[in-house]
Image (cartoon, rainbow, N blue to C red; front, side, top):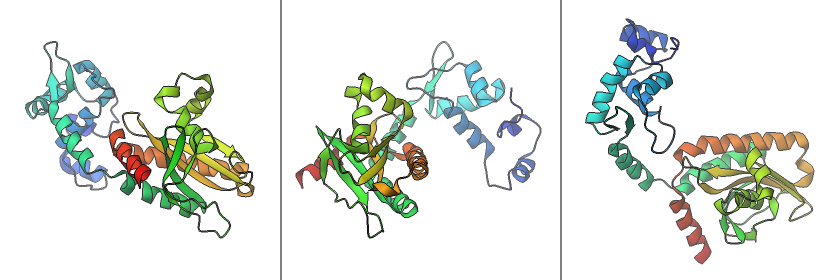
Length: 265
């Protein structure tokens, strides 16, 4: 058992005041934090965890887990079957559905594109697939006078450019194709002169917590500015942005409706 676990203090004689002093006097309710930590032990859909596994993943004593789980079962955040295994309960599904209802993909992606464009000084865009084409759903153009200018709603071939290759490789229909496997393995694509000899781009997939592909995040600009070092910087920023957005992203159905609206405007 890891005695350095940040929430382990509840299983010792350390008082709440002492724990707060250790944690920079952050306001906290340890029982709530420990309960939420138990819920975070579940990692796969439909997973059923034994008491031993919960203890291993959380670092808590089994007696503490049983007390917390009793409350979580009572409030329907957890279920417990006849064999004693715990599963996520119906209250989490109800709350999850409520949280998705007000999520706007545009409200999440646009600020991210603005940050990407500000820091890279290049054009940042978000593409979605529409059949054999890709649509520029959102974009923030570079502040430079010499730049790659994009219009929202513009269409491009699916298999051309970094964004198109990402959308193709991460689409469920092409997962088994040998050509898409290297892209899926590394998680990014760099294109130089694919669609225009003067342009380059770096793209990464935007996946939600379910692993659903929502689109491709891209930074694009003049080929001469996409040096090896700059590509590494752009790639890291895109990957970090995708990771930061992932927990907040909606289900794919929300994206589908947005793409549908662009299609028929």
